[in-house]
Length: 68
Image (cartoon, rainbow, N blue to C red; front, side):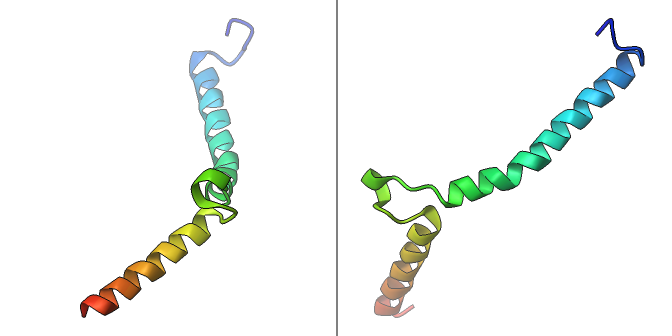
């Protein structure tokens, strides 16, 4: 930090901006990776979105059978 000429507050603001920019850049990638996650042992070749959609359909079918 001693080499930075703007002082401590400027340096902390710079670090905060860098962290915020990194989070804003990574967040969409994280969401895509979570929803496209595939594990052959857990959900076969389906991604997480397909797994949740199938689960939602099964719940709706069970509710319909139960008369809800």
